[in-house]
Amino acid sequence: MANDDLIKGQSNFDATLQTEWITLDPDGARARVAMRDELRQPYGILHGGVYSSLVESLCSYATAAAVYEEGKIAMGQAIEVSFLRPVTEGHAEARAVARHRGKTTWVWQVEVLDDDERLCAVAKMTMAVRPVPTGA
Image (tube, rainbow, N blue to C red; front, side):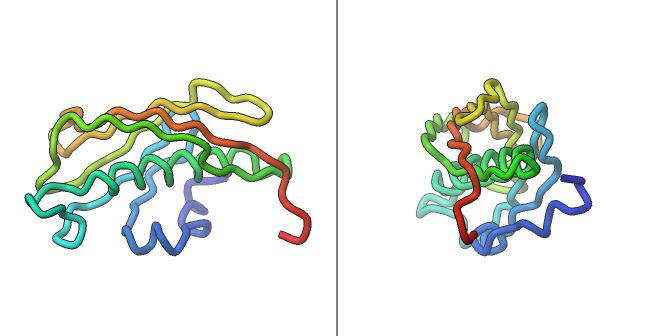
């Protein structure tokens, strides 16, 4: 999938989150979210669910883009996120690398950084890769 076509596959959820797609390359997929008030938890920092959602969306979309021509889809199977530093302003950018690209499972390693390139979270995302369901 060409980067020019990235936005065409955006889900309603990612539109709500206002995810900015940068690249879907399995060797360096990137996306980010701008910090805004509705994404803050009660202490004023980026909600942990936003980090997790950004990681899952990026890995799902990048895997799907890579396997689409094979008649396959991708969906989240497992996610583990460790939060290291809060984001209070600017952006949270997820940078993912596919570490395993199997026939039925992909495993991604992800770092989430702030605008100052500080590591804010690390994650591992496992994706299930399956044939497109009949009628989809």
